[in-house]
Length: 389
Image (cartoon, rainbow, N blue to C red):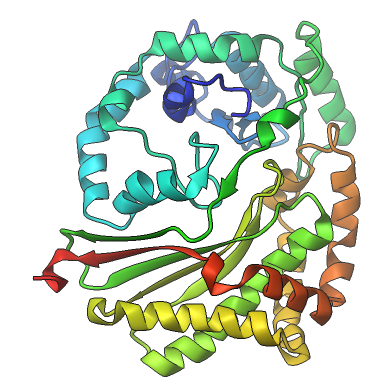
């Protein structure tokens, strides 16, 4: 989506769904269901932050057909409006539901206030939602105008993960993707990755009509990007430390009815962008107590640092999770899908276990001191209207 021109953001917000539901030039989605009955093939377009991606699951037996379908989806899309029409019919219900949940104030009020320089797609859990009327006005001609030039000649990177015959994969890829016309070199998009940040000190409070009797709190502490492996992993681990402290201190202090959680996120697309995120829910009458408790946990970590006991206790389960994940196709697909354009990513994978087995308390404490200052936090408080009546 870095390649989406300014002014086309709202078109891009639905383009992936609409494109995937448009079928092929000669076959509708219903036609394709009949043609591929008994076959394990399929694909869809996802517009990511730094790439457009087609993905699918298949078997070794259907691999060639899967490749052929993907190539056809790129070269001969149908651009039918079936899925777009369905989305438009659901918009009134979708936006009505947003108005009665925390997602409404989050998307319509907090995101525009706290996120500077980028309102195109979900980023660090902050979802962009355009005005309903503007989304309803998007048509397939606009989507084709946006996607066609990019799909025509943008560089391709093909990744296959699973129990497959490597020689056969190469042969099938040559017959399909390799037979496509030559494509241009990648365009330098580094300028578009600058200037995006989470603002510190943004505080919003909203009351909504909702069946949920609890109040909700969402806190963001701006951090840094994840271009450097060590910094990215330390920010992620710091999020786990915050989560653990919240569980130990906030729930014990306020009771089991409170359910705080936290995580650390760092962008590998946008320079300087990252956050420690806290989510919590509780009695609407005690939201200030909950805010103070969550910010208090952050302040203690900023002032006193992390203990070796915390690192030892949290690192081993994380290492086990990493090892379990490395046995799945999805882990490898998400981590090597840019192995051609970003060879450094392969080196990063080779160091992940060693890193989490040797986490530095000093490095974590330095990050906590830098990022977890309460004055730097931005947060959203949402309470039910019934609590204010």
